[in-house]
Length: 132
Image 1 (tube, rainbow, N blue to C red):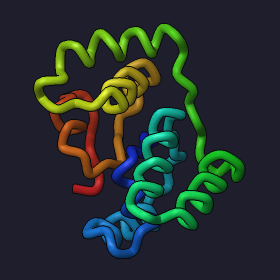
Image 2 (image 1 turned 60 degrees about the horizontal axis):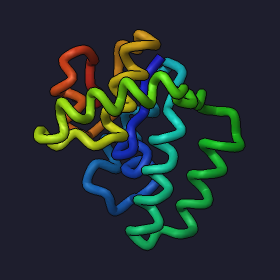
Image 3 (image 1 turned 135 degrees about the horizontal axis):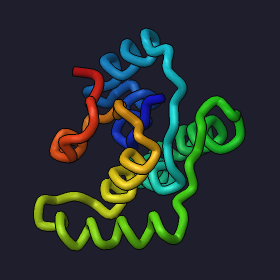
Image 4 (image 1 turned 30 degrees about the horizontal axis):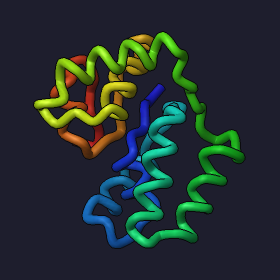
């Protein structure tokens, strides 16, 4: 199983993103199931809207929410609380609250790999970040 972060979703769907081709190439070679979270979906759709990618926001939303091609993990109240504790410890390093929720899910589901372009995932120290 591979966890997919916001930056990877954005790069996959926005051809002008500098990581677009790397993302597409990695995904074409990947054979593992993909998992993301409700928080990552929220952040991805919001980022697309803010960057004036309204049509793509709907397309990506349909893919992630309606298609069933990606497993969506919904944070529990306990996950949320643990992410808040982690955020308080790592906000100075620039970890967003969504980064903290992702770390909690990666650890609790024992997901070994993250498809991400966010350097904070490398700082987690517990996950292999792809593409290299």
